[in-house]
Image 1 (tube, rainbow, N blue to C red):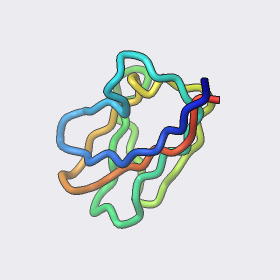
Image 2 (cartoon, helix red, strand yellow):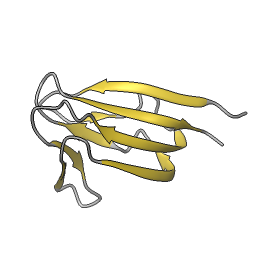
Image 3 (tube, rainbow, N blue to C red):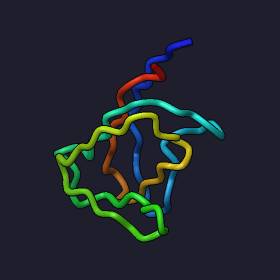
Length: 85
């Protein structure tokens, strides 16, 4: 079954997964909102932080959103839009 994925993630100073499920594989665009006050940091594959500037976005094909983790300044946001097709 195909499902739409559309969510806004309010970031905090602690890493947070982009899914509340144990496994959620989807093809998505991820955007650090341009109104953010500072870069957000995604946890890289080696555990190191990967900063995204406000307004930066990337497309991911078939990524497990439960493993995509983000942190940043409280009040900043990330959007995740796509689907499980």
